Length: 414
Image 1 (tube, one colour):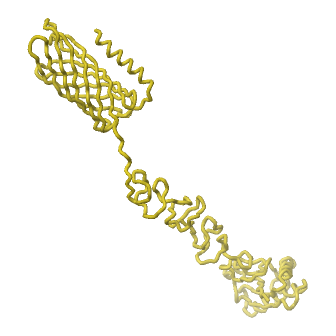
Image 2 (spheres, helix red, strand yellow):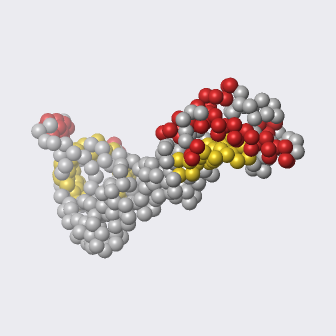
Image 3 (cartoon, rainbow, N blue to C red):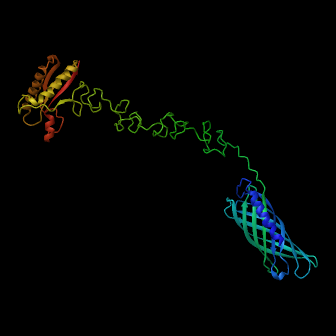
């Protein structure tokens, strides 16, 4: 039949024209549409009516991207098989639609609804039946506002329980939905309207960026209006006030602190390390002899101790292997001409007190005489013996007793 060729030709033409437009697809919530259509209507055989072409108009509304509703009117052109002449048909429906993949360009859907059909033959009276229908179809977006649509429905009149079929090809025009102007409300008064503000509730007077968030000039995670240290270098860990961390509380921040575990209360230098005023390697808070001259070798307590000086057993005679250590003492005194030294002799607690007192005094005197021979003036030297009265280690162990047997030099600065 010729009326079957028309929808096919019409569909091909529309598809061809669609390639001249920029395609864009989306079901638009809250929008209206209307669709002229052509198609065909198939009657069940016992109705004695020829299948005929249909022409119609559909108006619809989208509640959201998935659910829609539409009102449909079709004119049907048919003929009676029993010689009754032409029959005019009028189909009217109210349908609901459910769309799948509503943001795609090709959108399938299901539909169902209620309505009625009126048949008006040239001879005889007209006949009206109410009916239900169900079916589905495809929508293909040609442009943002132009849609090609194919639809097939099964129609069942209430009274006669007949099975009819309708198929249509439609060109749907979507009414453009006016976009609401963005709200200009700026609830926090920062100059960025709420619809663009990613940091709602910014305090009044705080400077913000284009997103409405408080400025953070040094990018340390603390906004400028709270940052007490606004120029923190990049990557430095900070506290809640935006200031670099100072884990040991010595006043030198962790990013600059070369001695990060300084005990609390210890004075430090610019590098965060404990002060060592006399430069002997023992920090001031541990240094029991704080005025050691430059170049002197000290023990852990910062005292100028000659633990390696050896004497013959029970005597004050210095053994030759000790001479290099004593030579270094003379060199230090020559480098520090303003320093006087008290040479102290010490022993462990082995033996009687009086014996150890005398032995320590004699050994200190022997060291002083050796240093005098190296060119150090007598006015700069004195000696004293303390026996075992001033131990620096426990006398309960061999190692401790060895440390207590020593010659210690106490400087006196003039």
